[in-house]
Structures are given as C-alpha cells and as structure tokens.
Length: 256
Image (cartoon, helix red, strand yellow):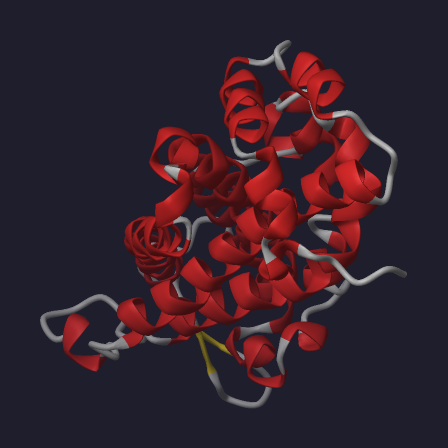
C-alpha cells in the first residue's frame, strides 16, 4: 500500500494541491460571485504555514507530556508516542488540505469540523487507519479501546490546521506576507499540540483499559509489541510502570 493512502508527506500534499489546481501561468481568477480564487502559490504558502505549526506543536506537546508524566520517565518513549500522534495529524492534514478544503474554499473551517465535506474529523482517522497505525506498534489489539476518542482529536487537528491556513492571506507580491496573521502559527500549534497530547493520553488509556477491563496481560501485550522497534520500547516502559499507570485517574477511560 502506498504511503499516501495512509500517511502523506508534506511533498505529497503540495504535489496533490498543485495537480488539483492546475497550471495558472500567473493568471488570477474569480468565482461567479466575483470572489478572488486563491492562487497555487498562495495555497502552497498556506501548506508551509500548516507545516510550521506542526513543527512548533511537536515541541509544545513534548513539553506538556514531560511535565505531565515527569514521575514516569516518559522521555524514554516520547519520540515514539509523538510519532503516532504526528502520523494521525498528517492523515487529517492530507485529507483536509487536498480534499475537503480545496473543494469547499477557505471558509470551510469557519463552521468547525462538521463543515468540511466528508466529515474529515470523524473519518480521516477512523477505525481502519487507527488499527493500521496501532499495528505498526504491534498493539492492534488496543484498537477497540482507542477509536472512540478519535473524532475529538480530529477536531483539534482541524482547528489548528484551519487557523494556520486562514492566517496566510497574501498573494504573490512585495507585500504578500504583510497580510498574514502574525499570531496564526502559534495559535494553530496550540490546538495541534493539544491533539498530540490527547492521542498519547488515549493510547495510554487504551493500554490501561486493556489491562484492567479487557482482561489483558501486560507481559503478553509487551511481547506483541516487541515485533516493532517502537512498540518494543513502549512495551518495556509499560511493564516498568504498569501499576503506576493503572492508578492514574487521567488514564481511566469511561466504560461504553
């Protein structure tokens, strides 16, 4: 399966936007309502703004998680956990920026996640995709405890993506950047980082649910996770901190 069909790269997204919008040759177009149609160049600048927000969000999320789990030495597996979150965020970005957003126009984000055609927030990181990502970590068995929280996480990502996208407004020219919102990237990074933290909390909460309500065994789960290098590190960390994880109120997922 091609990576684009699961987790796109930024180059994939840029290429898809360029292909979908077509060659413009420097021309400027307007809609039947006489509204200016964004150029390819502007939309590529918008993608770059979203990318910058993603990079900033990674740092913000890492800091928040190190503080939250300071007693459990989460630093040793932080890159692996954030890697899962970033993959999910890229799936939402790829779906929104090359599908829902280009089809609906810049105002699509204004009404929230539900305004994007196809319900990006609820479907982009659905059960099959989350199962694939968890499978990469060797923990596909956790999917049933994981999927319910995905729509809320998708909304955080969409909100951040929308702020970064809409904050980039200037067309090509000497003053293109002067029209941009100077605070947009930082504001966008806040929502994306919140989504990352929620993914990690959901993943760890799914582990706790599997062990406490699902009748799972930590040793067996760690053995399954050993099939993946990233999963192996998380599995060993889970074994080391199993009892402490079970006692954390913030990892107790309400029963369905």
